Length: 204
Image (tube, rainbow, N blue to C red; front, side, top):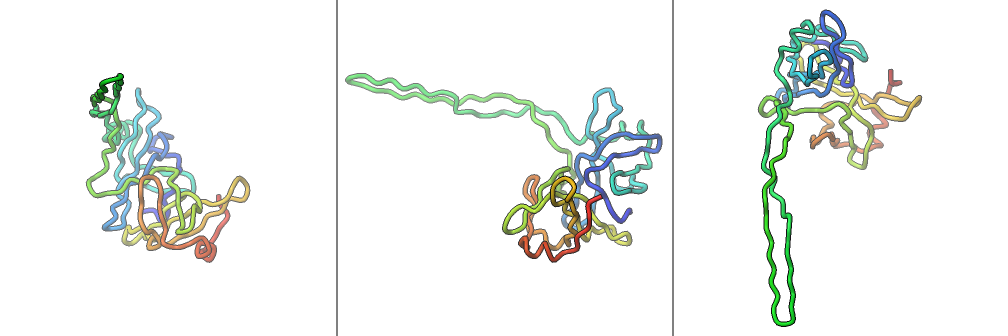
């Protein structure tokens, strides 16, 4: 298992460039990364593929190299499935008033819409590229990399990208600082002042 997994990374298959990372999938109970989601770039209809972590051969600061070929990537399961769901809508109401009487009518009707359903393993957490990070007193940046213990495969820290343009820097935050994850936002137990005391490095 590589020591560092970049989040917003290009993906190289054994026979060349094949896509970009769209999301990471983490098992909260074991604190391990189980899959990455790759947007393939070479299929007839580009799709998001669910790739098991054992396919990662090596990483750099901005790329992930897989053991599989492009053809093998295209054969992997799709991460998104398209389904139709019923959406109930309070769509109309009719009000009539007269000198001697009034009446009110309302109705609810259902519409079928196509929705995307993520095929993450049960009880595992999807972390999308661009996930925001908030300290207890406000936003502090976005998720950049995961740092993994090579011996155990456990995620120990993560990097937060802070700043703008030429002043970007990474802050190394222990996984234990996470309070919760909701949607595409990671909420921390610590405040911004505590963040300043953590190790900083210039963003690559």
